[in-house]
Amino acid sequence: MRLAILNEGYSFSTRLLFSLIQLFSRQRVPDAARLTFYRPDFYGSHSKALTHEAMRGPSAWSVAERELMAAYVSNVNDCPFCIGAHRATASLAVGDEGMVATALADPDSAPISEGLRVTLRMLGKLTSQGDLSVEDVRAVLHSGVSRQQVEDALAVCYVFNVTNRLADAFGFEIPSPEGFQAGAKYLLRRGYR
Amino acid sequence: MSSHSSSDKQALVKAIEQRILTGPGMASAELRAKSFADHDVPESLAALVDKVAKRSFQVTDADFAAAVAAGFTEDELFELVICAAVGESNRMYQAGLAALAKASA
Image 1 (cartoon, each protein chain N blue to C red):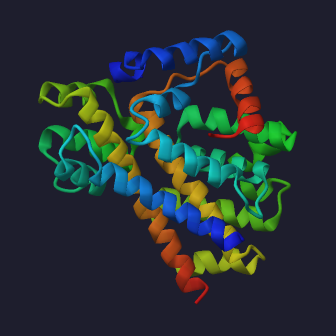
Image 2 (tube, helix red, strand yellow):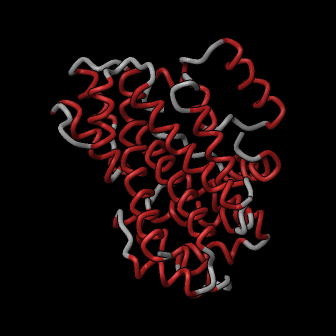
């Protein structure tokens, strides 16, 4: 990562934890996870709690749908680390890599529900333009998506707009395809805590 | 139940904002607030902060090197980059919630 403190500034016990994870998973601990261990009181602890709640907490959206939203927002922001991580996680959750790739490139041609399709479009507009009109949100509500689901999707959008920026700015190392796959399995089994 | 979970998330977003802006830090609270707002940031830091907020894929080693050369420590930059990322995302989130409130009024 771009700051030496994010590569070397961890406590002995944290470095030991990273080594153990690497030993058992045979993969380097991803930089997204490492970052949350650096001065966790400043950002990492709160961030993990919110990310877990948004991605795995109670919601009418499935885990697969929320992972697809995460990948979609990351794609709009052109963030290679997060696209790779959440495309892999969404693909594993859905069980259809091709469908996820299609949905990221063009939600209109993907075999997904109309509600998810218009929600992805809404998150894409908010992410690229920083704002939404009342009509944008009404279109989503008219498709049958509940008010609560819009709120839940906005929380996913917030989390990944923050994380995409940190991944780019701090320069997260891009894992190998095997690394992304191992990360996806971990995120589906354990979540973000 | 479901409205409980949403207010939990809004409360967690607020908690992140309050922690990074008003909790203990190496960078001054004033500088953290300016980075969060992406407004009135000192010139030696402005390029980095504005890129993080608006086009983070363009951040380079040189942006960090310029800030370090101007005297910012790595711990200060860690905080200020987080403030810039959270600030921009927070404005988006609030804009989305405001549009939702109007649409469902």
